[in-house]
Amino acid sequence: MPGLLLGDEAPNFEADTTQGRIRFHDFLGDSWGILFSHPRDFTPVCTTELGRAAKLAPEFRKRNVKMIALSIDEVSDHLAWSKDINAYNGDEPTEKLPFPIIADAKRELSIQLGMLDPDERDKEGMPLTARVVFIFGPDKKLKLSILYPATTGRNFDEILRVVDSLQLTAKNKVATPVDWKRGDSVMVIPSMPDDEAKKLFPEGVFTKELPSGKKYLRYTPQP
Ligand code: BEZ
Image 1 (cartoon, protein in one colour):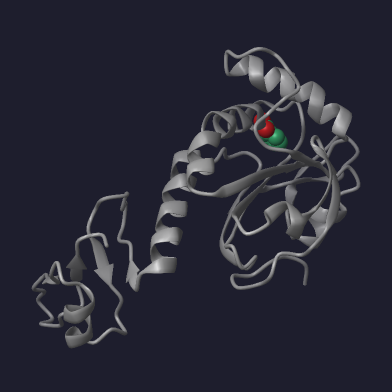
Image 2 (tube, rainbow, N blue to C red; image 1 turned 60 degrees about the horizontal axis):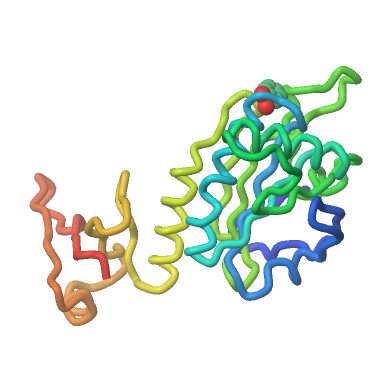
């Protein structure tokens, strides 16, 4: 079955992009990476998403995350569309965006990566790409995937938030609770015994009492 599951290695595909031909593993290097797909060039929701992604590029760069987009049109369309995206952002309408866009006009990569949305089709009846987000770690393994249909735009602030969680939990044996953001307390993972948690988190482990009497809601300040 095409597609990628958590823990799978990113395929080392070759592709034409707005910044030249790439080999994906070379593109990623030792960085984290985010690959986000779009249904089509010159479409309204995609334009707002790429505009927001461009605005947030410095935040992804700070976190050592290389960004790359994909849409099922040619490089020449991507470059012309980039002018609209920059204009939407209130910037100079140039062809330059802070990340490349893969040209997947034949949908080869979209099929390989399981990105097509069967409910959204072009005038010829061909399926469009869904809004997929793949985040890869420096080991090139898939750490997170998000899949939205073409009709629902993503929240790129949420994507940055999950990058923060992924990077924190890659380094520390913790998990992040609902709506967590950088600086908030984190949770001790269920498999860690209390005595190990006390040693590992010198700032303290705070347990919330629950009717069940089970002491599984354990917080510690963000390491
Ligand atoms: C859009 O980007 O606006 C869009 C693309 C395909 C289907 C629906 C919306």
